[in-house]
Image 1: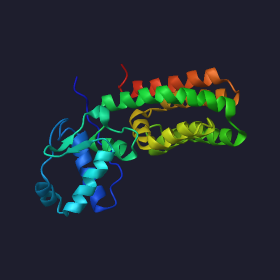
Image 2 (image 1 turned 180 degrees about the horizontal axis):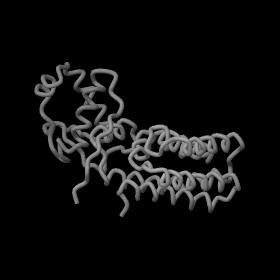
Image 3 (image 1 turned 135 degrees about the vertical axis):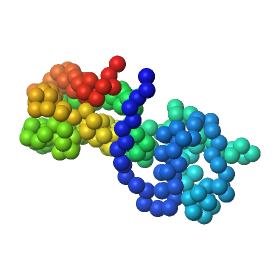
Image 4 (image 1 turned 90 degrees about the vertical axis):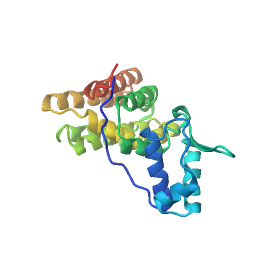
Length: 240
């Protein structure tokens, strides 16, 4: 089954080597350079990008560090298999957004969320304080005041999930929440409820997470978080 590609602009590089790395990275992720394929030589790439060899080499080193490329003597610069890419790297995630999100990416993202966020919600139920609850309730309240298919709804949805990760008290969960923020935002935008009834259902589902956390019911918080993630998958058609 062919997936519909949805392109969402992401952040840009702020230097010559960052911009070259970004462009090559997007080309790799989009499949314009396939796994195991050798990149053009330095002379061709420096001419293509209009940069010096040191700038190009710095760009390649960046992509090697992120797992997208490997360099070998007498072989050249080769695209690595997708399994080697550092998917938690914020640039790699951002380049996926630039290259275009398909159902596979959204499903993969949901799977890592299911592995982490229900546990984060359970821990938040055990460890949250009143300040955490204020932030969560404010986010949910604002979700109910704006259109479901709006940027504001997505931002509040994201704010709630980040607040829950913070309330878990686990620094690894907080770090994961920050690293995948860009991809989560894109997922929320794509899966936002388009009518008032769907929005109200989504808001109620998020309220159940917060109330379970407020009640210190770890099991209910975990179940409610799992349901929210699956509902998002259903809305943007990446379930199954």
